[in-house]
Amino acid sequence: MHWFGQSWGAPVCDPNLQVDVPVGQFCAGPCGKAIGPADTGVIIPLLSREADATDSAYHLQCFVSVVLPLDG
Image: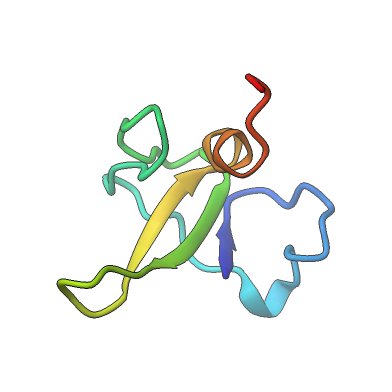
């Protein structure tokens, strides 16, 4: 897992794991919006049966909502 934008103080925010903000890449989370230059988030590999792993960018809030859904 890599991260981009401003650190939010989590252990994942190791400076060695920071990458450039993937401006223009679409969020793989529920919003589906393009990542902007001031956005914060994570990049994780997306695995599928049909293809090799690809990197997927998520806004931080979208990633948290996918990992920790509050509707149940």
